[in-house]
Length: 457
Image 1 (cartoon, rainbow, N blue to C red):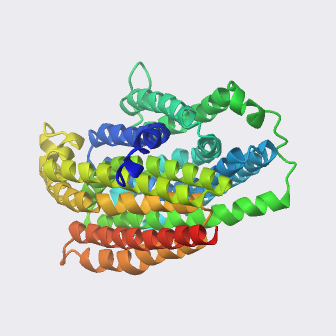
Image 2: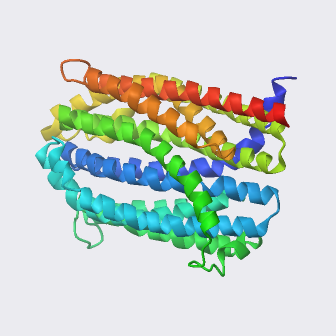
C-alpha cells in the first residue's frame, strides 16, 4: 500500500510530462537529423556543427534556465485562482526573455573570435564561423518561445508548446534537406543551410504557440492585450531573483558538457565528432528527465500555492521514482547497443573517410558506456532541481550545481582527458562524477526543506 501511494501518481505525472518530453525530444530529434545530414558531408563538418553549437548551448542554457522562473509563479497563481498575478508573471517574464534573447545573440555573435584561441582544428573553425552567424540570431525567437512555453506549462497546458515545437521541427527537417544538399533548385549551402533551417523554424514556433494560446478560453486573456512596456519593479525583481539563479544552474551543467566538446577538440576532429555523437544520444534521454522535471515544478508549485506540504512531498517522490525507473531502462539500452547506435551517424560507404569514421565509432561506443552509467544520476539531479524550483528555492541549488560540476566534475575531466591518460573516456568520467555529486546533494536539500515545511505547518 505504501508503494502504491507513489505509483498511483504515475499516470497523471506522465500526462503532464509526456508533451514536454515530446517537445524537447523534438528539439533533440532535429539536432539528431542535423547531425546525420551534416555527417554525410564529412567528420570536419560534423565537428564544426558541434563547435558552433557549443557556443549556442551556453547561451541557450542561460535563456532557458532564466525562463523557468515563469512556471512556478504561474502554477502558484493558478492554484490560488489569481488571474492578475498570473498575467503579471507572464508579461514581465516575456519582456525579460525578449531582452535576454537579444543580449545573448549579441554575446554569441561577438564571441566568435574566441574559436581561434581555443586550439580547435583550423578546418573546423573555418566551417563553424559562418554557421554560427545565422544560428546565433535564432536565439531571439527561441528565448521568446521559451517565455510562452514556461507560462503554458505553469497553467498545466503542456500540450501546446509540444504542438508548436513539432511544427517547427518538421519545418526544420524539410528546410535542412533542401538547403544543405541543394534540392528543388535551391543552392547547395552545406552546414550554413542547416543554420537557415534552424532560424526559420524558430520563428514558426513563436507564431504557432501564440496562435494556439490565443485560441484557448483558458489562456486567451493572458496572451492578448499585453501592455508590454507597462512594468512593475516588484514583479521584475521577483522574476530576476528566481530566474537568474535558475539560469546559472543550467549554465553550470551545460557549460561542463560544452567544456567536454572543447576538450575533445584538443584531441582532434575524430574525438570531437565522437563526443558529438555520444552527446546527441544522451541528450535525447535527458529530455525525458527534463519532462519529468517540468512536471515536478508544476505540481510542487501547485501544492505550494495550496500550502499542502505533505502532499507536495508525496507527489515529488512519485516523480523521482518514475524518473529512476525510466533511467534504468535507458541505461540498459545504451549498454546493450553501445556499438550499434553510433553507426547511424556516419557513412560507411564513404571509402575516402573510412579510417576516420571507424575511429569515431570506436571512441563513441566507449563513451556510451559512461553515458549508460550516468543516466540515473542525470535523471535524479534534473528532476529534483525541478521540484526545488517549484518550491522557489534557487540560491542553494545554484551553489550545489557549481560545486558539483566545476569543483568535482571539471578537474576530473581535465586530468583524465589528457591524450596520454584516458582521452575522451576520461573527459566523460568527469561528467559522471559531476552529475552523481549533484544528484546526491540536491536530493539532500529537497529532503531537508520538505521535512522542515511539514513540521512548521
